[in-house]
Image 1 (cartoon, rainbow, N blue to C red):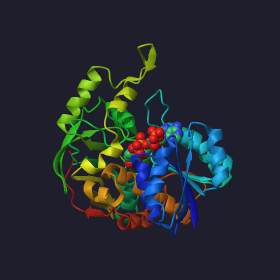
Image 2: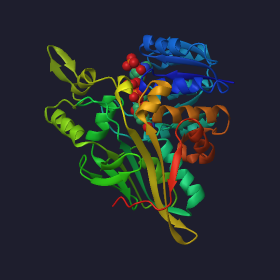
Image 3: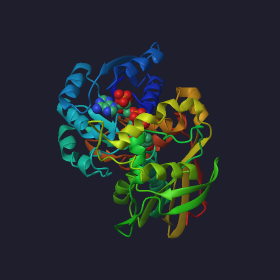
Image 4: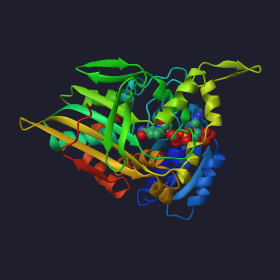
Length: 399
Ligand code: NDP
């Protein structure tokens, strides 16, 4: 039925590719295009023979002209961007130039300024509207499913949601002393930045990892979770009615924090280029080169993730609470698609968003965050595509 161009061939892309092939009635043809073509070819080799026809190509997604040429050649209905956030704007420009819908899982970041903000991509709203094209932003798990969870809570269980706590726990163990579960550069930049949350119409800033809570996660147990800034806070603060406070917490082990602290103290997490033997290198990019490739963690990682949202507010004049979450098992993901749960929980929602767009269920002209669509068809797909969710109407407090 539909043709999709998938850009990127990393951990998340691998899951998107497998999942598109599991839904051939929607994804009849896909093209995998990335910087390193051999990685695209490896996926094709593994999955060729399934009902979905697979093509591969080399592309530099920082180069808009190259993207336009590729899109004009393949003529996809949608581009699924699972490269890096630095490529979001060139890919959106190429979509506008070729009349193609767009979806991504992370908001644009200028490479030299680690700042998560939707302003650059929201600025494309009118252009996409005028072109009659749909751009779906942040359609992974967080951002992504967390926004759909909030929209679902708002639609079914609240007149007004007053507070949201997004809780992201990873109880997985890969056996390495230190490794990041997705692109190390993006991951470390996220964690070493100041924390921030939204209360009473204002952003409140904290030092990195300054606020810690202990929470008992279903399927995982008790874990220390740290307050971080996360990009969905910006769109949800705008799109959830009556919201007074929204925060995001992610779990890290003491071991992870110790390693990160040392790396930071010796300057290895810096993005400022330094001179090294007559060459300019960025310490964080060098660190990425010596750390284990996140795509290689799949076979080694055991344990589960639990990611969800606790919403509190009012329904019919009475206080109401609702906790909706997904538990995902690293080894089950590996058995199904050959990757760990972090890539799985990001890639499955990206495929679902693209599927709903191609089916015309989630399709409107403009640039949208996921909570601006009807959550029900997405929630139903999550149950069928490997990310079932659970509900609790009497959740523990995060305070
Ligand atoms: P990886 O580093 O594993 O993969 C990124 C891929 O993009 C690589 O194949 C890389 O090529 C390719 N790439 C990078 N630059 C270019 C370029 N200029 N042109 C073409 N291809 C390029 O990252 P992940 O798969 O872990 O993450 C992918 C995306 O998903 C990121 O944007 C990340 O922020 C996002 N994410 C979102 C989450 C969510 O829940 N919303 C959670 C986790 C990740 P090469 O192979 O040559 O390096």
